[in-house]
Each structure stands twice: as C-alpha cells, then as structure tokens.
Figure 1 (cartoon, rainbow, N blue to C red):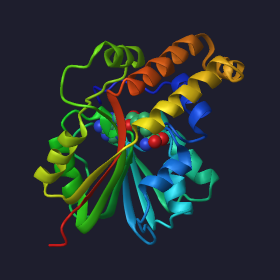
Figure 2 (cartoon, helix red, strand yellow; figure 1 turned 45 degrees about the horizontal axis):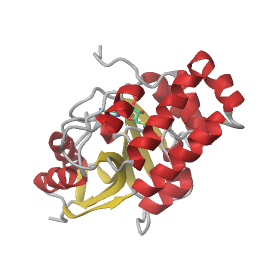
Figure 3 (cartoon, protein in one colour; figure 1 turned 120 degrees about the horizontal axis):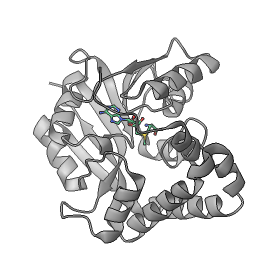
Length: 260
Ligand SMILES: C[S@@+](CC[C@H](N)C(=O)[O-])C[C@H]1O[C@@H](n2cnc3c(N)ncnc32)[C@H](O)[C@@H]1O
C-alpha cells in the first residue's frame, strides 16, 4: 500500500481543468505542448509520460502527433481512472495505457521507450539525480527526454513571496533550478541538454486565470469547487506573484541519450 496521500482532489482538478482545459492539469494546453515538442517527431514512437494526470496530454500525443503507444504513469489512482476513461471515450484505448506506480524507481524495463515525456509533474519528485538516472535507463539508445516543469530561480531558500505560494498550494514539491536539472541530466548520461525559460508565459497565464476566477468565471469555479473556491483564488494569486517576482521559473527541458 502506498504511503502517498492523494493531493489532486476532485475540486482541485476541477479548478485546473476550468482554466487550463479539459484533461489538462498544467498551463498552456495544446499550444504549450506544441512549443515544447517543436521539432520532435513522435510518429510511430513508444512514449512514456511521467505524471500523466487525467491524460489530456496523452490523447494529444497519440491523436495529433501519431505516437504508436503512450504509457502514462502516475501515483494517484483516481487520476489514472479518469485518464483510462478519457482514452476510451476518444477511441484510443489501444494506443494509451495507464499505470499506477509508487514514487521512486520506475517498474519498467531498461531501454523500452523512444521518448520520455513529462509535463509539469517532475516538480513533485525531489531527487532529480535518481529520477533522471531512471529516465535514462528506460530510454532506448538515441532516445529523447522532453518535458516542461515548474522550476525555481536558484537553490537559495525561497523568499517570502515564493514561500507563500508553496505554503498556499500545499502540494509536495521538490523544486530545483534549471542548472540543477541540467546537472542531474548530464550526471545521468544525457547529452545535448537544454532548458527554455517560460516565466513570462506563466506569469501572464496565472494573472489571466486569476482575473477569470475572480470575474466572469467565479460562478463556474464555485460550481466546480464549492466552498474551496476562495482557496483556489488564493492559490492562483500566490502563483502569479511567485512567477512575477521571478523566483518561480517554469520552463522546458530536453536531453538525448547517446546512441551508443
Ligand atoms: C500538475 S499535474 C500534471 C499532470 C499532467 N502531466 C498534465 O500536464 O495535465 C502533476 C502530476 O504528477 C503526478 N505525480 C506526482 N508525483 C509523481 C511521481 N513520483 N511519479 C509519477 N507521477 C507523479 C501527480 O499525481 C499529478 O498527476
């Protein structure tokens, strides 16, 4: 039995999907995916999605990018159940498989994926060096790691604005800076590593979300989250301010496993 307590409650997922689109628990939806997948050919490829959530990204990877198969892994059963249901509704159950995992090493064979994808999930995994060792292990030689994640500006103690966001959102985070991720990727053996900063996009997105939640979207937010609506408004306000002050630095990540 997992020690992990589910953090993405139904009302939280309701708030996330309200602002970021059906199936998406992270900002930017299909447009953001297109940006961080620019130049990536997924046609006919076997893809692992680490932290798949309710599976919106996986539908896009199979339906629009032609992935042969996507395995989505996550640590929360209710999210996996919703991802399975989504795949079935889209007629994609043969191409999309979802598996509940424990935090830690992947229960997956060496060299079994062409691409490891992740969107805004690795923030939850504290030990980036162990994580990227695992990502490297399950990739085939020549395979690609492509992700986006919520990073932080540096390895200093968070300032009060960033700490307020971390406290308000109340999730388990193991945040690190882009250079820290690069070190973890390269220590694992990745080459051609790169990060792209998305702070400006995230700041604008959370500001717009906050304005929607406190304006014309307020009723819909209450419909989705009930008494917790004001809490989610606080979460988005705190996130906007943490990004605006420059400490919260969402960004894109890449690395290649040498062909051998
Ligand atoms: C912000 S959500 C993003 C979900 C999805 N990638 C998306 O963009 O819609 C983060 C996800 O990471 C999952 N997660 C947290 N820790 C994890 C771990 N150790 N292994 C796999 N998934 C994890 C959470 O349960 C959650 O579904």
